[in-house]
Image (tube, rainbow, N blue to C red; front, side, top):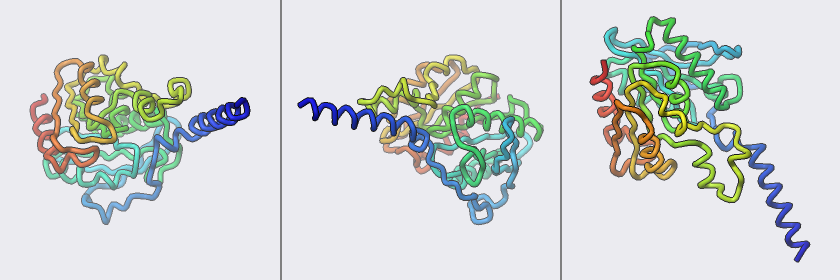
Length: 264
């Protein structure tokens, strides 16, 4: 019996060790190939190189729309690269908006390794780029998808923006990890917590939260819980039948542009 317990204990310790070492490989699943702008749905966008404070050059896509419209800075989820979001950029561009699809470090041919702090630095670089292009913070909409909602929250607590859009958000990575790895002390091991639930009370921009009620990756209950902590003005839109990455098939684009049009 003792031998069996020792084997089980050794296996558990080994499993915890592996999860600790490879946690960022689980959280961040980048497509590291360079996105092909020419073959995308938005060939009129331009490739831009955005410099971060820690010396990285991040390939991103930018389009300047109508002068009276804000710029939408888009922060993707944990998988793929910006080219996978070209259909969203297509819709936004067709509605007159300037759009910046921000390329993360370690994604889409960019150097560096992703982390919470690193992605925040990437977001700050995106804001600096927008400022150089002549956009004030009140001309900026921050739009985050899934993992990217944590980037938006981290940026949103520092300034007042025209608005924030959170698509399929979570309360924290720790909460998601505890649900999946209930047998592991994730709170002690997690490097990148993206603890949005304890930050959103500091947001001071109008915020739209959208979520599909059939989302099996991040259940809508997480989005509702996060929404409760966000100050007014705010709006929550649920999409019946909507999953984790198909909300534009359910009319999310129209809801987003309608929300933006209400902002001053």
